[in-house]
Each structure stands twice: as C-alpha cells, then as structure tokens.
Length: 139
Image 1 (cartoon, helix red, strand yellow):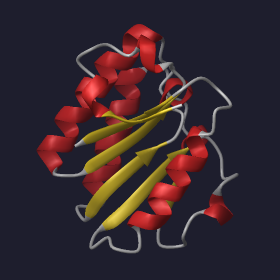
Image 2 (image 1 turned 60 degrees about the vertical axis):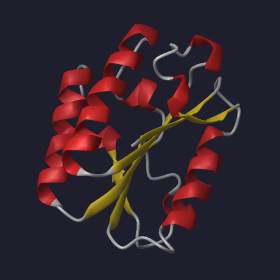
Image 3 (image 1 turned 120 degrees about the vertical axis):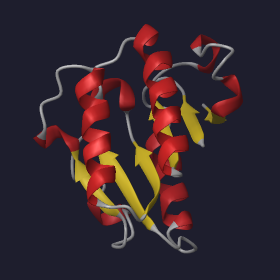
C-alpha cells in the first residue's frame, strides 16, 4: 500500500510523517525504515526506527533511487513499512516524474508486502486522478 502526504513546502508534512512513524513503531511486528535528506530528525524518531540519511548517496535520477530502495529491501526482509520524507528532492523529481515513481513504488510495495508512506512537496490539486485515492493527508 502506498500513502501520500502532500502539500506545498513548509506546510508541516514532515511533522505528520514523524508522528505517524512514531505511532506505528509501537504496534509494528516488523522493521520500519525512514528515509530522510539528513539526520536532523534523528532524535525525533523512536530508536527502533532505522533512519537512512540519503544525502550520503548521490542519486542522479529516479531509477537510481528505486535501485537504492531495492537494495534496502534486499538487506532486510523484515521491513514492514518504509517512510520517505521529501521524495521530490531525494529522487530529483519534477511533477511529471512524481506519478511515475509512485507507480514504481506501488509495484515494489505489492511485490514485497510492505507499506510505503511518502511526503511530497506537491499541491493536492496537482496530483493526478490516478493517485488521488492514495492521499492520506493534503496540506
């Protein structure tokens, strides 16, 4: 399952993502991974959540980012949920690439049986109709 937290920059998407991950870890039976552009939120996350600072890896495009996701999954078959904060910047996406990468992540989610929760700096009115049902929070 894919869930989206969308809204323009500075609207509080990260706060909602952090709250959600910290609630989920209380009942999770598997592992939870949180991808972020820095370690800034390290102390806001429960210590059972695996924080991955993606700025340490130099993605050139969305294909490399998806390969990175596959690498994480291949190293931990117990991942239950994956949170991705700021996917537009992490995967170097424009609005057109957003729909494509969400589609690819949906395939990954279904194939490996994990939930992926994504925050994206995109207004809900700019999200295509095919993705609207995935919106969890629109700010």
